[in-house]
Image (cartoon, one colour):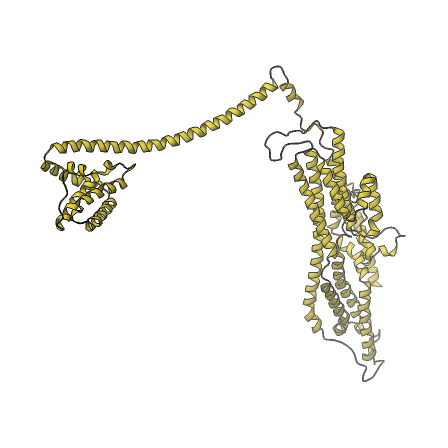
Length: 590
């Protein structure tokens, strides 16, 4: 009796505080005031109509009352400090707990049986605390029970099964909600692009000003964009009907389509085998009729591909449940675990009067654990608990609003700019000609710059060649003058001059070139016979031609003079007749 009064007072206090939280407080201007509901027209929670059938209170009938659409007011209530009291006070109205009523009754019945049997065969205590002998005394009649260790060992496994079951079901619900979120976003995107690009015949990648296809007829524009908006709504509404039970939505679906579309259009969708596909086809045709550049239509049609993906994803969730063997094993595991739990709990409640508290404890444990499994089962198929009708209504309203935003003169110049361009001081046609001429001039300037750069590169190459030619010609003239002077002098003087010049020329020659020429001379002279003197002399021009540019032999002649002495030294060591030592004889040999 005391417990009943306490519970009643607790619930009354919770109700009073809840009412006070949404009452008008004139002394406090910041007090919370309950605002009129702006959420979806769909009712949240169990039916308030007393004449509603009992099937709507739990089971499949109650799923349509779980399609929650939250606004700010609902979130305020959701995070209220009174949420724990409210949730406990409405425990008996929970549809989840009503769905598992049979299972909880079964486990509670087992608990009552265990308590009654053990009381009869083990004795009992009356209200005055006096113990009495067993009512059934027999050798075969003994108290029944199980060790609690079995259940504590299996508890982690049961917890993992339930966690995986609920997480998987929630992920399916979350995925379905995201699919519908994509539908909402991309229907807006589709109608926004269709409205903004209407009559634009320029490419989306073009940097020029928008180019209008032709003079836009406001009535035609309203009709064509209206068709895009209507078929966008028809697709999502057909998708909602495709994912809902036939007996719940078929009549409303047909009535809505006939009220918004023409008889031909509505009949074509209703009679189709796959209604969302037919509505999506009609939407694609409506987009194709819009006067705009084909690349812009391609961008709009990308949204239709996303609609196909969301539709296919929803069909996958609807047709493919969590593997049945997993769901069945989890249900069997938890059922057996809870049915045998009273046998282990009887001894644990020995401090209570005749172990009687074991019965409500078993009922609560069964209620919560069976409730977890039932919750996962209810979430597994998400479409009948998603507010898809609210989504469709929102999409239809948004699309109808978007297509009315832009006027037919969206691409026209402002009136002030038009008046300025049409003034006598400015001639639009001449301005356009000047613009074209400036474009041509800029293009020609770019081409001239390219030609100048090419000519400069050619001139630099020619200058490099001329410098090389001048250097070689200077060296040749100086050599000839030296040669003529040396010819006039005696052979002794020539030899002395050559010997004086040799150290300077040896310092100027590179080591690598000297080594290469020396190696080639030795190879050639060792292979030659005594008469090979002429052949050695003939080989010298060939080696000189390999080191000259453009085959000019005279350029490197002074550089080869140091090799003459080395040649003579080698010939003296090998008893080979000496070649002519004067430059005149050397030139004549060449």
